Each structure stands twice: as C-alpha cells, then as structure tokens.
Amino acid sequence: MLGHAEFSPNYVRLLQHGDAEDVGDTMAAGDESAVLRRLRRYRDAGATDLAARIVPLGNDARERAESRRRTHEFLSAVCPAL
Image: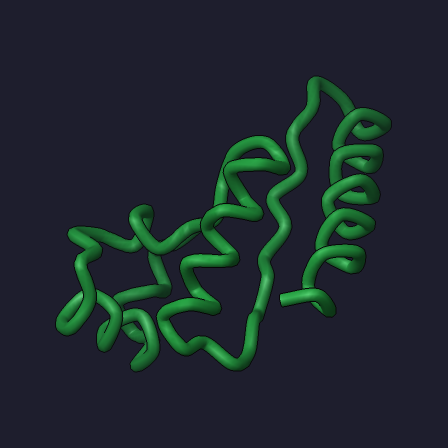
C-alpha cells in the first residue's frame, strides 16, 4: 500500500531530512488519541496541509465501511482546530 512512497518527492524529503527511518514512521495510525498526537506533531513541525489516506479496518465490508466513516468523521472534527 505504501510502495509508491519511494517515488513521491514529499516522502523522499521526509526520509532524507526528518527523523523517519521508513515511510511507516510518517503515518498517523492508532486510536484517536494516538492519531491526534501525531497530527499535532505535524502541525508543530510546520505542516500546513494534510492529505489523509484512510485505511479502513474490519472483518467484512460493513465493519470496514464503519471504520472509514468513523475515521473520516474524526478527521473532519479535529483538523480545523489544528
């Protein structure tokens, strides 16, 4: 899923100049508290734009749809405040 990162100038710069060792280190993943902490780190580092790729989790289509909806709702609520 993240295999394209080596071709993205943004990811390449993050890996060359940031403290990330691989693309996974640049992800905001986990529960709401963990994601919010990561988003605040991006903000504090000077990020002005965010492009989110939501990866829904679940055992079936219904659970994945709910995961996507919940994540989208969460991001919609917290991003304007950042």
